[in-house]
Image (cartoon, rainbow, N blue to C red; front, top):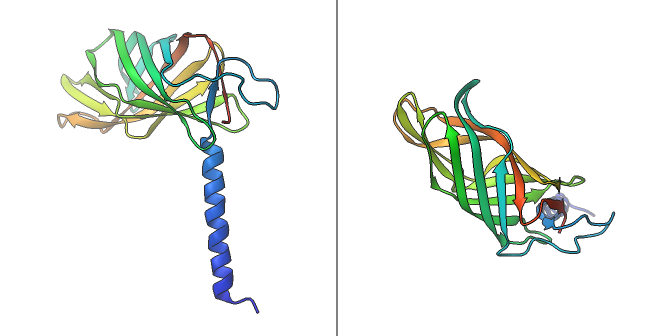
Length: 203
């Protein structure tokens, strides 16, 4: 006779296995340096220590609610691949440079943080998550600080050239009482080096 206890244990086992398999599938990611043949894995992937350089192709904006409080005409973002990715792990990048130019207010990078790219199944895209990226900007004459903490900030789209479309809500981490609790960062970066062609695939 199958008891309720046995059924309960079986259900727990199924849930646990589903969680393990689901997590592994969702996080398996590599960045291919060329276009992989249909149904195959990367022949070559961006290796650890490889530097990735991005430049903006649209103006970067920060909004509070629906109001644009800051616009930067240009910007760059660079990072070194720390983890090249594989089955069960995301691609991780240590950001080494984050610059802002042509801004309507003073913008400074306090810390650059890290990025993670996680493959979106069935696509040539990856979800981009940032941690430890801290930026200060002026709002109503007050210096406000915003910092990412495992914050989803946008999407990496593979192709020639690969792009990162930024659209993320960044929480406030410091500043005066006039500072908003968060700001929305938006814009587009395009990969400029080492190659414009990068595709996203499962590890």
